[in-house]
Length: 312
Ligand SMILES: NC(=O)c1ccc[n+]([C@@H]2O[C@H](COP(=O)([O-])OP(=O)(O)OC[C@H]3O[C@@H](n4cnc5c(N)ncnc54)[C@H](OP(=O)(O)O)[C@@H]3O)[C@@H](O)[C@H]2O)c1
Figure 1 (spheres, rainbow, N blue to C red):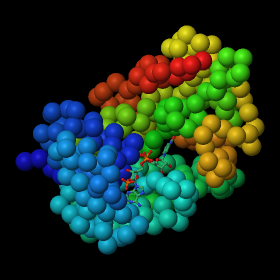
Figure 2: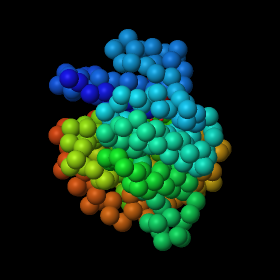
Figure 3: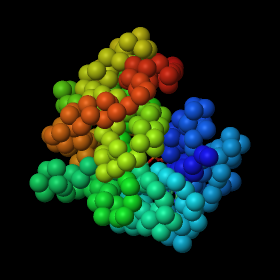
């Protein structure tokens, strides 16, 4: 009999990607029935999922009472919070939501909880950097989950490739040249994930929860320098794209002022402590060795997401 997998963030990138991954693979669809959680079952993304056979349940991570019925009967729960939701940008809200969904999973007797986590930057930097709230808050929830009586594993997403399609794309200058601007030094390495690969990382955990109990997956295709990113655009689009390192106070792409303020330290920090900390490259190597499916390279992502500079 198939087991119920409940996915938070079903209408978003991480949760939605996991659902699509399972729906697109008959061997996984046979094993897992899907339930997607949303605050608004009438939104188009939820309706489309229902049309594909996903059970849609309405619940709100900020309303603990709604969470127990949302996870009831589940074999596994994939839980992701959105720190940036509606510009809330609140560690306290994210921590409360994460703990509430974990408590609900324990109460409902869920066998496996997969938490979308991130590294604790305060710990990685020995207290030198304490302002990367959207990382530390997820890590605090992870620590809480590790103390609960539930089998759990942790999905830590790298820097989304999608950030540079929607939020921080390269910009065309008046003279027709195209420039990619970021705060990273040209030699900094950034772990990049095509977030539509989420299911490729989560599937091994779903299939072998005991093996991965307590393990953290460091999720990216590879570490890329900004120079490799612009070389990718140049190869794929045929337009020369150059890299410009900018100060973190300069306006970046389509970020809101609050997002830019909050991301300032983390984008700068990637230059020094790196995104996943000092063991990031080794941890990524371990994670990649657990996977069955090939991940999307930066160049493949660029080809899959054309056009880039249609009127350049
Ligand atoms: N961008 C990056 O490079 C990056 C890297 C690593 C980690 N992250 C983290 O990824 C997280 C966002 O995940 P995502 O990219 O998948 O988000 P997304 O595409 O923006 O979607 C957000 C999802 O969260 C759901 N959601 C938000 N608030 C909710 C609530 N109170 N109750 C129930 N569901 C709620 C939304 O559902 P409804 O609106 O349908 O209710 C939606 O499905 C953030 O916390 C961010 O820090 C981002």
